[in-house]
Image (tube, rainbow, N blue to C red; front, side, top):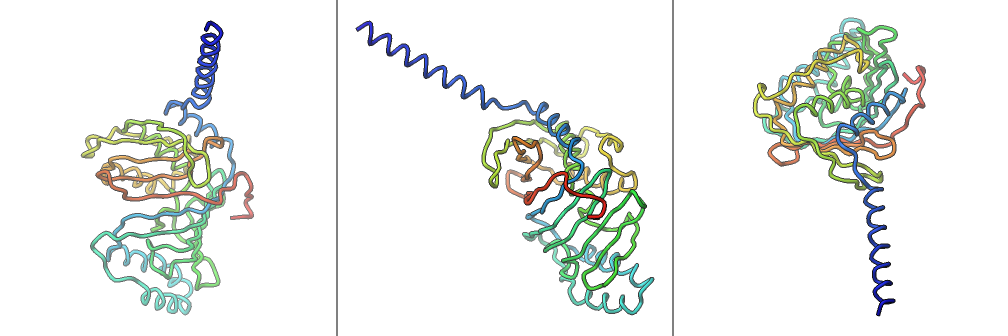
Length: 296
């Protein structure tokens, strides 16, 4: 009888030991610690590239169409009148009709980044722009001229030199530098919880949920952008400032992020308004520290 009790006790102790070690090995980091690790990891990444997948609800208004037509033709019209006529005809024929109600849209883009802030984005296929802008390429080389963006339209054999303050969608903000800055901003306006570890598109990832209670602009805590800290050229300030305005405007109820457990990089996010999915974005084909200036 004593032997049986001892065996039972031993089994219980072994079970408790295993459970304790398993729980200890899967202990989740605190949100502030995880954000710190994300920033540390990014400091050690000199360059990266990925394919961005986006989908969500959006409105393509007549004003947006007008901007797309005017912005992407003015430089060509100024310097290459014959090519610009052909370009403009193509653009006019492919502009969508005005849509007032939100519709579900998707987008696929290839993105490159290299410090200090070299950018290149190729629009593979996007519902967010007129069809004639698919397969176009944007390049930003602030090391050469921080006030210039080069635009390569698929129907033209040359790249167009354009002012940095043009209409470029998410070109300046689709990188991890901006993503982490926004995370820092959100952290001051939300309740954050690391809910667990799960498989996210084949990667072991932390699931991190930001829950908001922002009703008006007055509810948003002020956030002063340290451009030097984030390595952001001051010439792109207008676009970064506009990106931060989305919190009071969209009135998110929550945003969920997936963070790679080993590499400490953002893999994707989902935005919710009123508890309903509004937008999602994720990265695939991620490569780190492999680019040179020749790739831009």
